[in-house]
Length: 226
Image 1: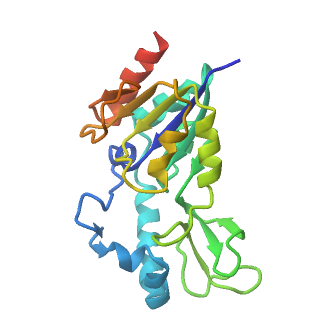
Image 2 (image 1 turned 90 degrees about the vertical axis):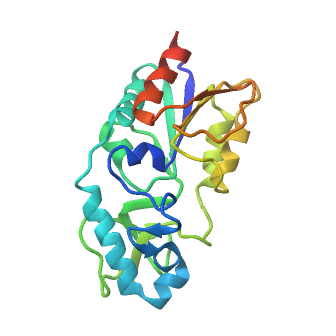
């Protein structure tokens, strides 16, 4: 039976592909206050602004490509059972070839009904006011905004509970509930933490690799494959 590798990824892995993050810019995301474009309140106050903001993010996404870290993780599937739990809303893991990706915070290339959160559609073009679900309700980005529940967190925790190896890549592990996931891994599961500026305690069960994802993932694979 193949070993199960669970991978937790954050903004750092996609940043190397050119996907911009807001946490490095004092709460601004592409010049916008995060609370104005990533909260239910912001959407209620100015839905056109929010829809345009995500339309721009979607356009950006089509201009970037998976990097070596995404590709290396996809290749792991030839010898391991790999589950990727990502906080990112891009599709770079899938484009690199990974087949088992759980998006904790939603997906940029999907939209959902404002009436029924389970009414989800694929969406690659601009989303505007007047785009509605089959029941006539406005569609919104399929993104978990600040203040909203993270519906897939329980499934993510269950995956972590079965990890033989845990990789944490490009995430500060400071934002909850995602930050709690590493604690669900079995006690003896080796953990590899990959980040150029690691801010995690160097516990005996954690191997810290202070490198960007494109370098660190390869280093981690060599360590646990040797």
